[in-house]
Image 1 (cartoon, rainbow, N blue to C red):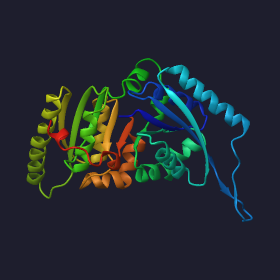
Image 2 (tube, rainbow, N blue to C red):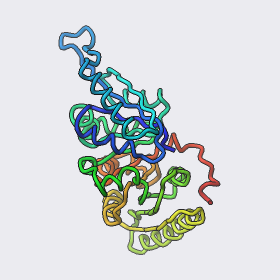
Image 3 (cartoon, rainbow, N blue to C red):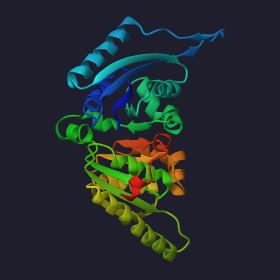
Image 4 (cartoon, one colour):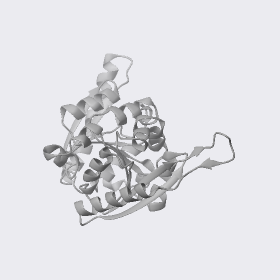
Length: 299
């Protein structure tokens, strides 16, 4: 599913470390290394100031390309440079032009990467993207050796936490998960966050248990190792909590949903999950999943 990957690089040590993870990502065959030069307006007016990539930058981009190619002989690596005042827009435009299936963003770095993941650009990418987005955590990337590397790079899909709300959107995310290579254990999670009385919450949890177990059974029938969970409380908090408790390798979530899930992915809670979770987060775009065959969901 994730054969063509786009990664925005700022040439930092952090970005170099993240390249190791991309090289080991399950199913990756093509990688586009993108460097965006921020375009600024002239203080006196009359146009923009946008320098092309200097020789040092060109050399660094070539070095990263060679580095990736040396890490994996199965990868085809190409490079791209854009000048834009809209950094998120440049990332998304390149993703569309190149037909990538996954945009990978680091969670810490210098200049570009720091701006993407600690400010408004990150939200713009998540909200505007028609592609799937993977956000890597900086603490993970900074310690990509030994067991850390094994868990979060070539085995990033070894234990997947998949929050669902029983909408068509989360159905599509599950259907894509079914067809993705390298998936080990799947933990399905539904969070009951609404109810006027304790009885209503218990009824909702009971109903959710039946629904989620049916989905888990269909995954098991397909040969996937699946577990199910129903929790009550704040969705963002519970997702992050379960991810840590279960030591998951990645959180796999739809970009849209209904009820709390819609609020989760379109409001400030989305930023909280994607930016502050201690685990990598893959946000499955509804545009990528649109039209998914419902037969995949029933097993």
